[in-house]
Image (cartoon, helix red, strand yellow):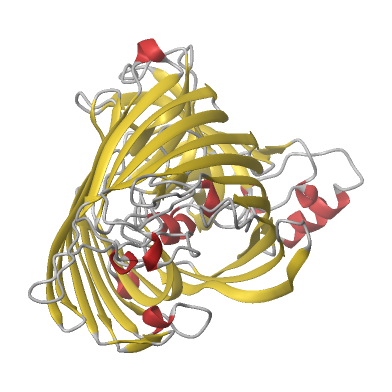
Length: 599
């Protein structure tokens, strides 16, 4: 091994040469060609060391999974085929028995998320490309692990490389362990939470990051033209994450956020300036196959709770969370709170527990869950709030259960205590995005959400509220996520019915445009803003609302651009027209430009 390192160093000044398998290091990104023997082991006939790539790749004969059009099996590896996969030479679901090149992200032995699928001609050797995660000497050669594959390399096999080995950078560990901490909870496929390929720091450590710059315009947010309170804000944020693979089954993640902001009033005069200051982001330990039990994982520390539509939660919580994953089901259980920081006073006094059981599928996701919060008494302004208990009992159906249609159905029943009253309420959100082949590249969306209301001051409280950790963000069919209840109003689903209609176009694979319309109506007519959360309308006062059901309507335009795998751009414009509930109210505007770079 020492000799190979010396030769690698000499190679910096000499022409590249071929090596034997003892020159391979954990972290090398390799392309292996070969075939499975009679015992099912993959035996390499050629290996080449490459620069690390974004996606793992497999070339072999694909096997269809029944009539499923969103799954296949290749070399024994199950593969999830995303609706946005880029195909070449074949159609969705027509891969059975065909030789294909598959590119995507390996999650674990049960999941490989496809990104590109190409039809391959001929009957050449099978091919596996990815990071070397383990090397072990054995009789007659070496056993190398790449993704879920154990590959035998004979002692005399020549290892090719276009550049000197010493100049080819190692890839930081990723795959199952790294992705598990981000995907076990069926995370929304959101660019906001995606990092780049990282910068290796030795064999077991990598630095990942995001740099974000944004400008936001808020026009007439008090819906009163006579009182101009327009604002123009500029902000920046840096997220730096250090992943340390302290053990083959454990990763330690530390994240620091740096952010600054400048606000300007309607005269474009800076009224507030905040210097860059550090804040802790996610900081956790993720333990895979805990206590030697396969498929049992634990996560401890400050971690992101993030579901697919962020209807339940999108929040950093200090938690102990356990995952039990099988091919046909998955269970997640947690106990959490929020310690210190700038959290809402209501959340700092809460102890939360959850249970989430699903069929462990993203494309056709079926789940039931419990989310319980025990909130201590707290004071906000001059108002005293008593202890609150809230149990959300929910069910959800997400994904492509109908051909060409990506739908959702979120339903929750809320029971507990609030302001010394028993609570019994329900809310739901149902909708679908239809993307027929004949309409390509256009897609259409319809949805309706309702959170029950209540204006009584005694008896059972029937007003629904979400968990308090929700963000209500997702995608219909485009590149970028957005607030699907309105980018300007951003309401919580409480005492409110929201009708949504949208049309969008995937102009190219990396560019999309969405036009979305929302109509808002009170479930129970009220002139009390205490039973309506108006999101960013912080300037509205209870006396400014009338006892009318019509709150108004909003139109949003969202342009998403993924200019490069490291860059994305989001441009949003929103217009809100007040309804009868805001007599004399004037229109409001919102605009946002955001640029993100990831590494």
